[in-house]
Image 1 (cartoon, rainbow, N blue to C red):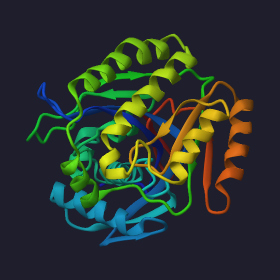
Image 2 (cartoon, helix red, strand yellow):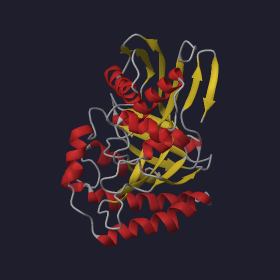
Image 3 (cartoon, rainbow, N blue to C red):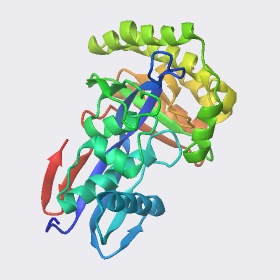
Image 4 (cartoon, rainbow, N blue to C red):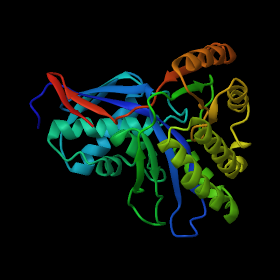
Length: 325
């Protein structure tokens, strides 16, 4: 076990931009697009302990992940976890996966164990459908992952990791009170979703390969945003039977419409929501958009703005940096 007093892990939130295929007709299900954002973010501290204890927001979930990792590794003892800063739970920003991976990463450092991101995900029960959170935790940037073979226990493979132009900005709004699907409810919803038409699945892949990714490489935000918004509308319709519309009805649906009206591009809903997002091309535009969205949300809503995370999780010991992934 490491002799250091505490291990700290800071992890970015993630935006989930959409799935590639719910049918799996070619042998792989899901797949997806996403990106890491530095705000909101998670910051945890983990130190050795005789049993598993935790304090701070999401303490119970953190204890569960720690217990899973220790059991997976066959290790006795425990750890004390302190969550200094949390990503809003069940909001569509990947709070569960980032917390699980961060806890596992910190414990791996304490015990001198392997910190491969795929192994971290398996040890904590994450990545069973989407691997966007796993790869944004590991690498940051814009991620495309290739889905899973039915019945396979493997985490979906990374197909592409691309940097996002440093001038692009994102405004993320989380309405008060709403909670996206997670856990058993999410699994049941996926089971009940109807299969989308082949033509729409093909259209999404065409948009991603021939518009969205080239626009990202060429720093063409209008083309990127147009493709992303179109992908969101198509794939959102695949989930409408379970979430009540192309986007979650109520505040999220109204927010997305308003973000577009106010000039954002690439507007949509992250995962099951309720978080909504819009992209703009400058700090000034992001500040103005965030101000307007804050007024729209009213009390209890949360608004985050900034660039995209160029790196994944940061890890350091109380005595100084261990690693910047």
